[in-house]
Image (cartoon, rainbow, N blue to C red; front, side, top):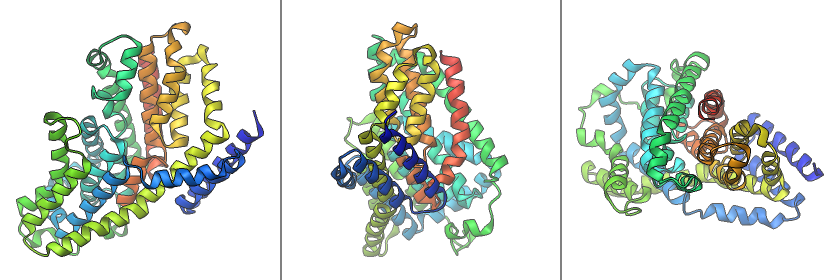
Length: 424
């Protein structure tokens, strides 16, 4: 093991410790990534990675648009009407609302396929509702963040499904139909365990009044008549995205377009102060960039530093030598890599391209090994405090990403072991 890798491990441990001790996550992650780039002899790559993150077309537009839409919903008080409409039945569910939120998000992720897009779209609407219905902010954010774990694996357009199915020379729809039971069963295990952890350990269904104060309107729900058009307005972007994915040509309606149409709908039904509504939208976009995109940029520099210093390649080489324990290598390898980098995609592609094609050489089915790796990477990303989707829901709920990670890690680990045992 080279000195660079040893030092990088120490840097990562120091960064994790600093974040847990409430140091600004953006500063901590950027500095850690920049130091690793410097030690790798590529100091300018940290700044290039920073700029790349600033203009990432896959994250910046949808997240900022979603945060702007959330601000418009708040200004127009549409969220109050929706809360007034749903609060009573939601409160009756109690702690099960956590499981319901997670399962609903999983279903939406099947259609949208982007963890960050799903978190932004569903979180902007459901996190405030859950909080007002009596769930602690961290628990509400964890429920939505946890729901992004692997729904995309049930969509035939998922790149991982297409790649793994080709390795086994199987049509992608046949691959999904053969393995859907494993995906759904693993999700249910993760959701049930996470719900139990949040209810019985973190007491997320028993919040203190101070925790909810920022999310509870000064107006009481019963002091105004519910307007059904306003109550359903926060759901418009989500409905448009799902319907667009099912019935319209691919890419014709994305997150940004659905959010803008949602704002237009609010402007039509509000009948007042369109200038102020638009101001609130753009203010929300700016706030989303500062709080959420800022963290994603810093996390990207951190992941780049690990790549440059050789930690990620060394980890992959270690996994390639673990053929005799491939099941656990395919499980815990991508899982740990995803936790460290905050990227399930990077972990999955790295393992599936380096190891899965050789599955037959150590007596395994490449489809099974590839899917296990994909599930592990998605679970690891969901448990990572630096994952984009976790940062997004943390920003919406105004809590630390570490608080969400603490609620997710047990459920994701149990689901990981469950998947490894039933699949291989």
